Length: 448
Image 1 (spheres, rainbow, N blue to C red):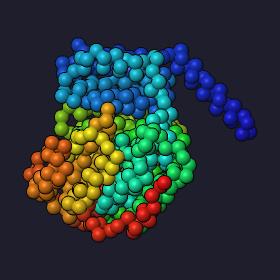
Image 2: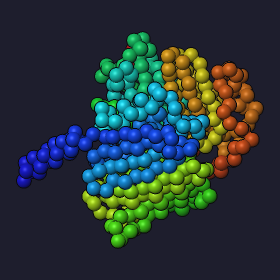
Image 3: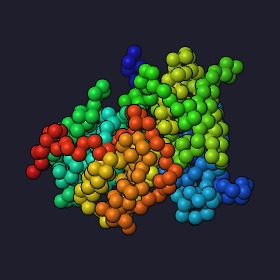
Image 4: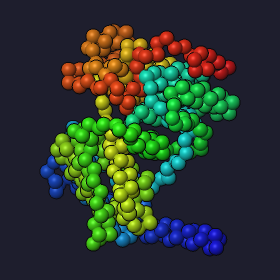
């Protein structure tokens, strides 16, 4: 029986490949029909996950999706997107338009596979480290110090925190060779020391740093890590701010056998990617959808079914969909004052900067670290660790320490609102661990 099922799966897969070869994706880019946006239409044979793959291509180009119409009934998929650049203008750059055509057209390879595991893995020119654990002050500072001590240079990293949990994907290179780290003993040491740091922050759930063998889309992987870690679960009795909470509802449309998901929340970059990513990874298929994000408030409506063809079946499932979509929206919310660091890259840079933040009692709610052509461009969203608004004097003191031309403020300090001190959701960095030495975490060993 198992052999018959396996053979049937192979036949079904080959049939789907045949259908896609006979009906390659068709892309039409129109700059004339809409006054204030470029219209991109994608038609293709349908398969699970294709909507996310298209949205991912557009999002990775930092395009703003202001409207979208989605239809994928039967074996055919059709999507129409109104997009602009970051300045709100149409896409007129020929190189960009050509890249979109090649990325979504018949010769594209956007139907790539996604990794399902967590760990340390060798990429083409760097080693990628995935971590998940309980959030606390100083966590990233201590993790980056471990990597510096192991003679690793952090060239790219993205860190999210949500609901007392922290997830990070860090791409590192060997200090001496400038390449990947492949020595099993050294990778084992790296995992052990990072786990020691994560265990210090963990009280209720396990922390993870496990070897794996693949590559993935960073932002989708962060969603997967936090979803698998159940960051959508709220503590009993926790009071949520209804004004800031996304408005998400799920109702069944019995005549059509769909469940209708409606989302209304403050618009922000990459919101559409975050919601579609979560529905896809929860094994739901979007058959129809309308998205309107032309104003400050975004509205999304989707007709969905589970991948087995059924609508949402129970109140418990409905509540889980709502909680997971709320979490997906909240994970990337940029709370705090935006600081941008731009300087020549060097080993230990991230460790030094985050230590200075920690010693000045700053909490970082999100971090993006990138290195291009030897230049480090790091973005941090910071708050005072005690829950009060960021003190302008502290920011200026930090800028003088790091360099005023190196660290710049990208927001208005006066506009920040205080966060309640007892809030458990945002404290990646802070000044609460000044007296702690690395001996507390078993980090005094260095790899040699």
